[in-house]
Image (cartoon, rainbow over all chains, first blue to last red; front, top):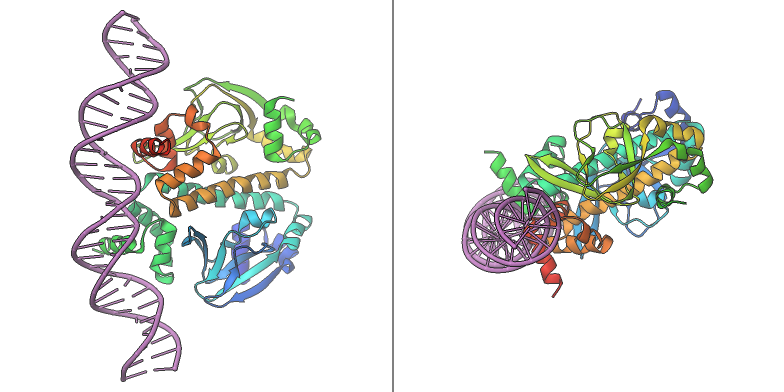
Length: 189
Length: 189
DNA sequence: CTAACTTCTTGATTTATGTCAAGCCAACAG
DNA sequence: CTGTTGGCTTGACATAAATCAAGAAGTTAG
């Protein structure tokens, strides 16, 4: 079984048999470094599951670019509320490496529960995990210093620091690139 | 129909008929100002829907108290991931005014979908809305100043500023009580 | 190979925000 | 009524982090 199927199955909690029922709903898609999977203002008609590579989620606030998240393998790539509520995307997803995705259309997504009985439950649990990640991110901004946020995130995903530009990681952590550079320098001593 | 039923129905998107099917799953509960609905370390066996009053969600980080959210009418009171995944609560919910809740046990919660066919879907949509609120909170910490965060939140919930102590609101906005006081003073001129 | 970029680092300076401390006022208890 | 307490404000000062600026190092394009 390919890695991506493992990723989907793990992330969603599907059995192999359940996945067999719906695997045709997913289309593989490749995105070249620098290209976009989703642009703000577009209707969000599909959801991506990252197999390989990294997508950067970002948006503009007061004309300034803000990196919100990096979707690596096992993560989804979608403006979730725009997808579910049929609204226009508020964010962009750009490939910062070559990326391989499995993509599912809104129509097929809505059809899953006819094939997999407990889908809505599984999907809810998946969403709850995402929710929990966001909750701890909020708390980290309420209670931690820049250096503490760096340490926390570095422990979660050390590899990303070799794969994404520092200024984008800094933005996602809510600090300037210079501050991140200095923290990192300090830590290496 | 009482206000609370309206709140639940609106928040979850239930029809009146659907709500009739499950209304017995909910128990009313009153909490006096200062008392707790949930304490960290306890297993989370129930979920609360706030009818009247305000619950403050908080936790300790490095021995410092951090206010994470205020649950007012229409909001839920629960450590969601602990509730869903049968873990111990990471947070406390304390009444900062007298509070009226409707409470549902985990057992009854799991039973809802046997009474209301599309429950898992509705519940997921509700969760997605909560997710979306959190997302914009994260972005506000990545991109906005203390004053901008104040303005954004004040527009969302101006009444809270008369009902909750400022130091707790400040904590929830990720700033010191003094900074909040100064911003507010400045705005009133 | 060289030029043009981009990314990262490092130093100097500024600024937003935190911390500490004092005092005011309203609520409340005795 | 009076003392105590908690919530809020205000000023003085400290500091984390942003900004500005220059240069080093690595990458890409011609």
